[in-house]
Image (cartoon, rainbow, N blue to C red; front, side):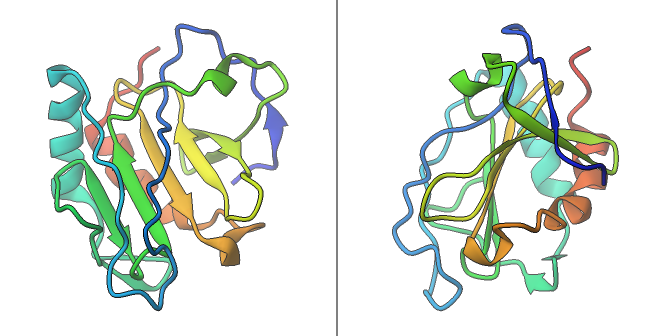
Length: 159
């Protein structure tokens, strides 16, 4: 994984971020709750393919999907790591000062909301994937490496 670097992301580059309706996002909660995205049909098809390929564990956490159940969302560690596929492109993606990283062939825009862990949105893919990590990952985005192969296999580049 390379270090943080600015991404000059053009407006045409799609990516994913919506608000995490975080009704319980700590690993001690019984289940996380998130807003399910509503992507166009073509993006939803990529997300459904991704859902079938996601790993059973990420960063050592067992799969524990958030409520409500959907092929467009997944989770590990009862909210420690939450994935949403088919989210809209975040406005920050147009900002040339936005930070980005690469993890095993998948590029991500990095946001660090105050009071929570990082929120990462895939870039240069035909469907946009948001991964929200809890505070223990404030300076550690290595869970993305566990998701990269599934993303590369099912959600093609938009270049």
